[in-house]
Image 1 (cartoon, rainbow, N blue to C red):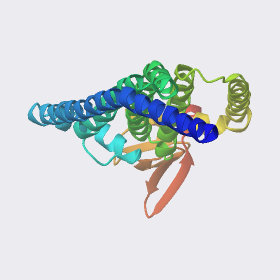
Image 2: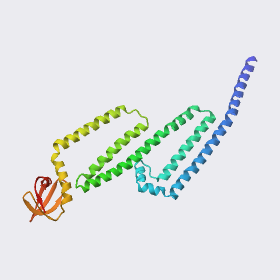
Image 3: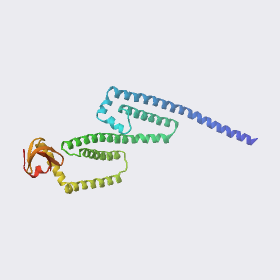
Image 4: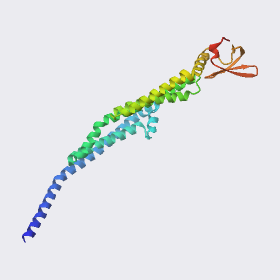
Amino acid sequence: MNSDFTLVTVLQNILHSLLNAVAAFLPRALTALVVILVGFLLAKIIARAVRTGFARLKIDDGLERVGLTELLKKFGLQDPPGQVLGRLLYYLIVLMFIKSACDAVGLPAVSGAITAFFAYLPNIVAALILMIIGMLVARFASGAATRAARDAGIEFAPALGNIASAAILFIVSFMAITQLKIHTEIIHMVAQIVLAGGALAFALSFGLGARDVTRNLLAGFYARKLFKVGEPVAVAGLEGTLAGITAQHVIIETGDRMLTLPNSVFLDGMVSQ
Protein backbone atom coordinates (compact mmCIF):
# COMPACT_ATOMS: atom_id res chain seq x y z
CA MET A 1 0.00 0.00 0.00
CA ASN A 2 2.81 2.37 0.89
CA SER A 3 4.66 1.51 -2.29
CA ASP A 4 1.56 2.24 -4.39
CA PHE A 5 1.15 5.54 -2.62
CA THR A 6 4.79 6.41 -3.22
CA LEU A 7 4.56 5.59 -6.94
CA VAL A 8 1.41 7.67 -7.34
CA THR A 9 3.08 10.56 -5.55
CA VAL A 10 6.14 10.39 -7.81
CA LEU A 11 3.96 10.32 -10.92
CA GLN A 12 1.93 13.24 -9.63
CA ASN A 13 5.09 15.23 -8.96
CA ILE A 14 6.45 14.50 -12.43
CA LEU A 15 3.17 15.48 -14.06
CA HIS A 16 2.96 18.61 -11.96
CA SER A 17 6.52 19.61 -12.92
CA LEU A 18 5.78 18.94 -16.58
CA LEU A 19 2.64 21.05 -16.48
CA ASN A 20 4.51 23.86 -14.76
CA ALA A 21 7.27 23.70 -17.37
CA VAL A 22 4.73 23.78 -20.22
CA ALA A 23 2.84 26.63 -18.56
CA ALA A 24 6.08 28.57 -18.16
CA PHE A 25 7.28 27.84 -21.70
CA LEU A 26 3.99 28.46 -23.51
CA PRO A 27 3.99 32.27 -23.12
CA ARG A 28 7.61 32.47 -24.27
CA ALA A 29 6.86 30.21 -27.26
CA LEU A 30 3.90 32.37 -28.21
CA THR A 31 6.07 35.48 -27.85
CA ALA A 32 8.75 33.95 -30.06
CA LEU A 33 6.13 32.97 -32.66
CA VAL A 34 4.73 36.50 -32.72
CA VAL A 35 8.24 37.94 -33.02
CA ILE A 36 9.06 35.67 -35.98
CA LEU A 37 5.78 36.50 -37.72
CA VAL A 38 6.38 40.22 -37.26
CA GLY A 39 9.92 39.76 -38.56
CA PHE A 40 8.74 37.99 -41.70
CA LEU A 41 6.12 40.68 -42.32
CA LEU A 42 8.56 43.57 -41.78
CA ALA A 43 11.25 41.91 -43.88
CA LYS A 44 8.80 41.43 -46.73
CA ILE A 45 7.70 45.07 -46.59
CA ILE A 46 11.29 46.39 -46.58
CA ALA A 47 12.38 44.05 -49.40
CA ARG A 48 9.46 45.15 -51.55
CA ALA A 49 10.18 48.81 -50.78
CA VAL A 50 13.80 48.39 -51.86
CA ARG A 51 12.83 46.67 -55.12
CA THR A 52 10.20 49.31 -55.87
CA GLY A 53 12.60 52.16 -55.07
CA PHE A 54 15.31 50.75 -57.34
CA ALA A 55 12.80 50.29 -60.15
CA ARG A 56 11.21 53.75 -59.89
CA LEU A 57 14.51 55.59 -59.50
CA LYS A 58 16.06 53.65 -62.42
CA ILE A 59 18.94 52.60 -60.18
CA ASP A 60 19.03 49.15 -61.76
CA ASP A 61 19.47 50.71 -65.20
CA GLY A 62 22.36 52.86 -63.97
CA LEU A 63 24.08 49.91 -62.31
CA GLU A 64 23.64 47.90 -65.50
CA ARG A 65 25.38 50.63 -67.51
CA VAL A 66 28.42 50.59 -65.20
CA GLY A 67 28.64 46.80 -65.51
CA LEU A 68 27.47 45.77 -62.02
CA THR A 69 24.57 43.66 -63.31
CA GLU A 70 26.87 41.67 -65.57
CA LEU A 71 29.29 41.27 -62.68
CA LEU A 72 26.56 39.85 -60.43
CA LYS A 73 25.67 37.35 -63.15
CA LYS A 74 29.21 36.00 -62.96
CA PHE A 75 28.49 35.14 -59.31
CA GLY A 76 25.31 33.31 -60.36
CA LEU A 77 22.93 36.18 -59.45
CA GLN A 78 20.70 36.60 -62.49
CA ASP A 79 18.29 39.12 -60.93
CA PRO A 80 18.78 42.92 -61.07
CA PRO A 81 20.75 44.52 -58.20
CA GLY A 82 17.58 45.91 -56.58
CA GLN A 83 16.07 42.45 -56.23
CA VAL A 84 19.36 41.02 -54.98
CA LEU A 85 19.65 43.72 -52.31
CA GLY A 86 15.99 43.32 -51.34
CA ARG A 87 16.38 39.57 -50.91
CA LEU A 88 19.55 40.04 -48.87
CA LEU A 89 17.86 42.54 -46.54
CA TYR A 90 14.90 40.18 -46.22
CA TYR A 91 17.03 37.33 -44.90
CA LEU A 92 19.06 39.59 -42.60
CA ILE A 93 15.94 41.07 -41.00
CA VAL A 94 14.40 37.63 -40.57
CA LEU A 95 17.62 36.43 -38.96
CA MET A 96 17.57 39.36 -36.52
CA PHE A 97 14.03 38.51 -35.41
CA ILE A 98 14.93 34.82 -35.11
CA LYS A 99 17.69 35.89 -32.71
CA SER A 100 15.11 37.77 -30.63
CA ALA A 101 12.85 34.71 -30.69
CA CYS A 102 15.72 32.51 -29.49
CA ASP A 103 16.33 34.91 -26.60
CA ALA A 104 12.65 34.72 -25.73
CA VAL A 105 12.53 30.92 -25.57
CA GLY A 106 15.92 30.61 -23.90
CA LEU A 107 18.25 29.34 -26.63
CA PRO A 108 21.46 31.25 -25.85
CA ALA A 109 23.65 29.06 -28.09
CA VAL A 110 21.66 29.85 -31.23
CA SER A 111 21.31 33.49 -30.24
CA GLY A 112 25.06 33.75 -29.60
CA ALA A 113 25.86 32.25 -33.02
CA ILE A 114 23.60 34.77 -34.75
CA THR A 115 25.16 37.60 -32.74
CA ALA A 116 28.64 36.46 -33.77
CA PHE A 117 27.52 36.38 -37.41
CA PHE A 118 26.22 39.96 -37.25
CA ALA A 119 29.45 41.05 -35.56
CA TYR A 120 31.41 39.53 -38.46
CA LEU A 121 29.01 40.80 -41.12
CA PRO A 122 30.74 44.21 -41.62
CA ASN A 123 33.93 42.38 -42.60
CA ILE A 124 32.02 40.33 -45.17
CA VAL A 125 30.33 43.45 -46.56
CA ALA A 126 33.66 45.30 -46.78
CA ALA A 127 35.29 42.36 -48.57
CA LEU A 128 32.39 42.11 -51.04
CA ILE A 129 32.49 45.84 -51.76
CA LEU A 130 36.25 45.64 -52.34
CA MET A 131 35.83 42.71 -54.72
CA ILE A 132 33.01 44.40 -56.67
CA ILE A 133 34.91 47.68 -57.00
CA GLY A 134 38.10 45.80 -57.84
CA MET A 135 36.41 43.78 -60.57
CA LEU A 136 34.88 46.93 -62.07
CA VAL A 137 38.27 48.68 -62.00
CA ALA A 138 39.96 45.59 -63.46
CA ARG A 139 37.43 45.51 -66.28
CA PHE A 140 38.01 49.19 -67.03
CA ALA A 141 41.79 48.78 -66.84
CA SER A 142 41.67 45.77 -69.15
CA GLY A 143 39.73 47.71 -71.77
CA ALA A 144 41.97 50.77 -71.45
CA ALA A 145 45.17 48.73 -71.70
CA THR A 146 43.83 46.79 -74.69
CA ARG A 147 42.81 49.96 -76.54
CA ALA A 148 46.14 51.65 -75.82
CA ALA A 149 48.07 48.60 -77.01
CA ARG A 150 46.00 48.38 -80.20
CA ASP A 151 46.55 52.06 -80.90
CA ALA A 152 50.28 51.40 -80.52
CA GLY A 153 50.03 48.57 -83.05
CA ILE A 154 50.78 45.78 -80.59
CA GLU A 155 49.34 42.52 -81.88
CA PHE A 156 48.97 40.90 -78.47
CA ALA A 157 46.88 43.77 -77.07
CA PRO A 158 44.17 41.49 -75.53
CA ALA A 159 46.85 39.60 -73.59
CA LEU A 160 48.17 42.85 -72.12
CA GLY A 161 44.63 43.79 -71.11
CA ASN A 162 44.17 40.44 -69.38
CA ILE A 163 47.49 40.88 -67.54
CA ALA A 164 46.43 44.32 -66.27
CA SER A 165 43.07 42.93 -65.14
CA ALA A 166 44.67 39.94 -63.39
CA ALA A 167 47.16 42.16 -61.57
CA ILE A 168 44.39 44.36 -60.17
CA LEU A 169 42.26 41.38 -59.15
CA PHE A 170 45.28 39.81 -57.46
CA ILE A 171 45.84 42.90 -55.30
CA VAL A 172 42.14 43.37 -54.52
CA SER A 173 41.78 39.71 -53.51
CA PHE A 174 44.48 40.11 -50.88
CA MET A 175 42.80 43.26 -49.60
CA ALA A 176 39.49 41.37 -49.34
CA ILE A 177 41.14 38.47 -47.50
CA THR A 178 42.65 40.95 -45.07
CA GLN A 179 39.20 42.43 -44.42
CA LEU A 180 37.93 38.94 -43.58
CA LYS A 181 40.67 38.70 -40.91
CA ILE A 182 41.97 35.43 -42.32
CA HIS A 183 45.57 34.54 -41.46
CA THR A 184 47.43 35.01 -44.71
CA GLU A 185 51.11 34.81 -43.71
CA ILE A 186 51.80 31.77 -45.91
CA ILE A 187 49.76 33.20 -48.79
CA HIS A 188 51.69 36.48 -48.53
CA MET A 189 55.01 34.64 -48.60
CA VAL A 190 54.00 32.61 -51.66
CA ALA A 191 52.65 35.71 -53.39
CA GLN A 192 55.85 37.64 -52.74
CA ILE A 193 57.94 34.78 -54.15
CA VAL A 194 55.72 34.50 -57.23
CA LEU A 195 55.74 38.26 -57.83
CA ALA A 196 59.50 38.49 -57.35
CA GLY A 197 60.08 35.57 -59.70
CA GLY A 198 57.71 37.03 -62.29
CA ALA A 199 59.36 40.44 -62.10
CA LEU A 200 62.82 38.88 -62.45
CA ALA A 201 61.73 36.78 -65.43
CA PHE A 202 60.10 39.79 -67.06
CA ALA A 203 63.20 41.94 -66.53
CA LEU A 204 65.52 39.26 -67.89
CA SER A 205 63.35 38.57 -70.94
CA PHE A 206 63.11 42.23 -71.85
CA GLY A 207 66.63 43.08 -70.80
CA LEU A 208 68.37 40.18 -72.54
CA GLY A 209 66.19 38.18 -74.88
CA ALA A 210 63.73 40.79 -76.10
CA ARG A 211 65.89 43.82 -76.77
CA ASP A 212 65.21 43.67 -80.49
CA VAL A 213 61.50 43.16 -79.91
CA THR A 214 61.35 46.18 -77.60
CA ARG A 215 63.37 48.23 -80.04
CA ASN A 216 61.03 47.36 -82.91
CA LEU A 217 57.96 48.10 -80.79
CA LEU A 218 59.22 51.57 -79.90
CA ALA A 219 60.35 52.29 -83.45
CA GLY A 220 56.99 51.20 -84.82
CA PHE A 221 55.14 53.37 -82.33
CA TYR A 222 57.00 56.53 -83.36
CA ALA A 223 56.93 55.60 -87.06
CA ARG A 224 53.12 55.49 -87.02
CA LYS A 225 53.15 59.02 -85.66
CA LEU A 226 55.44 60.34 -88.43
CA PHE A 227 54.46 58.37 -91.54
CA LYS A 228 51.16 57.51 -93.14
CA VAL A 229 50.26 54.39 -95.09
CA GLY A 230 50.27 55.02 -98.84
CA GLU A 231 52.94 57.72 -99.00
CA PRO A 232 56.34 57.15 -100.70
CA VAL A 233 59.34 56.48 -98.48
CA ALA A 234 63.02 55.73 -98.92
CA VAL A 235 64.63 53.69 -96.16
CA ALA A 236 67.60 51.31 -95.95
CA GLY A 237 68.45 51.93 -99.59
CA LEU A 238 64.96 51.01 -100.75
CA GLU A 239 62.35 53.23 -102.32
CA GLY A 240 58.68 52.43 -102.49
CA THR A 241 55.25 53.01 -101.00
CA LEU A 242 54.58 52.48 -97.32
CA ALA A 243 52.02 49.65 -97.22
CA GLY A 244 51.79 49.20 -93.45
CA ILE A 245 53.50 49.24 -90.07
CA THR A 246 52.88 46.32 -87.72
CA ALA A 247 54.13 45.89 -84.19
CA GLN A 248 57.48 44.51 -85.38
CA HIS A 249 57.77 45.16 -89.12
CA VAL A 250 57.34 47.82 -91.76
CA ILE A 251 55.93 46.75 -95.14
CA ILE A 252 57.14 48.58 -98.26
CA GLU A 253 55.71 48.04 -101.71
CA THR A 254 58.26 48.35 -104.52
CA GLY A 255 56.71 47.76 -107.89
CA ASP A 256 55.14 44.32 -107.77
CA ARG A 257 56.97 43.22 -104.64
CA MET A 258 56.15 43.57 -100.95
CA LEU A 259 59.21 43.90 -98.73
CA THR A 260 59.17 43.42 -94.98
CA LEU A 261 61.78 45.12 -92.80
CA PRO A 262 62.15 45.40 -89.04
CA ASN A 263 60.85 48.64 -87.56
CA SER A 264 64.32 49.38 -86.22
CA VAL A 265 65.31 50.62 -89.72
CA PHE A 266 63.55 53.84 -88.79
CA LEU A 267 66.07 54.30 -86.01
CA ASP A 268 69.19 52.93 -87.70
CA GLY A 269 69.09 54.76 -91.01
CA MET A 270 67.92 57.85 -92.81
CA VAL A 271 64.28 57.85 -93.82
CA SER A 272 62.87 60.26 -96.40
CA GLN A 273 59.34 60.87 -97.63
